[in-house]
Image (cartoon, rainbow, N blue to C red; front, side, top):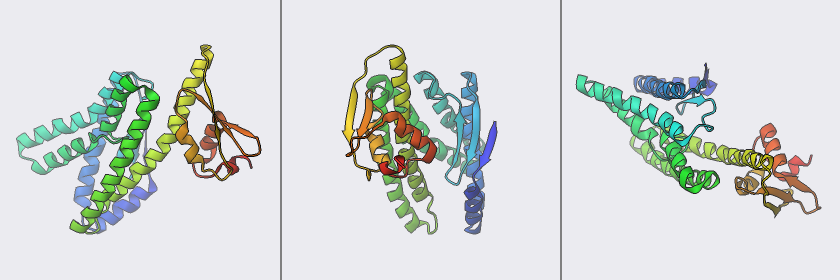
Length: 265
């Protein structure tokens, strides 16, 4: 298991220390790591390993190998394990009179249970939705909820900066969640393609949907129609066609930024 500390974390930590929030920041960081250990232990119980722990200015998160391949029950248990650890610590600290540590852990547990992806609450909602709506529809529903939640967090962050000058943590978190939301749309299409490949191998007949696009169409906009149980083909004005597989291949190489014309160069 590897630990990756993003360089910007060191800059953010230095700024926070200069602003006088060093103690609060590092106490929160310690229990955020403990929170992730809960996920890792539960994943190990289900036979999954932690690939890496990432430490960023926004938070700490563990990358669990083959997390998406697990059953809904396994994924819900793994997601619940982190907040459960914080609640157990909070109860113990309450009994010992350590009220500040109690507040920190209750805050972490409640925050992570927000129904925003990729927070634990969002992951749980996604698993439940998949059972009733299917993978494609649940992905899109959760992404919309995440976008709304991120906007609300940024709004709360503006109010936070008025009440607590220089504290822009909620604004940064909201912006980070919006970035994750955009990246997840790409992987939504990728997961769809993997499901389609499985259906092709099983000999199932798939519907092909064609979409007319221009060379100045943004790549991230065409990913929004991907992620369904049909295969996408994008037709250009000159008669050329771009397959869903080509779009995903380009994104894997170059990222989601750019226009369709960049793919033809």
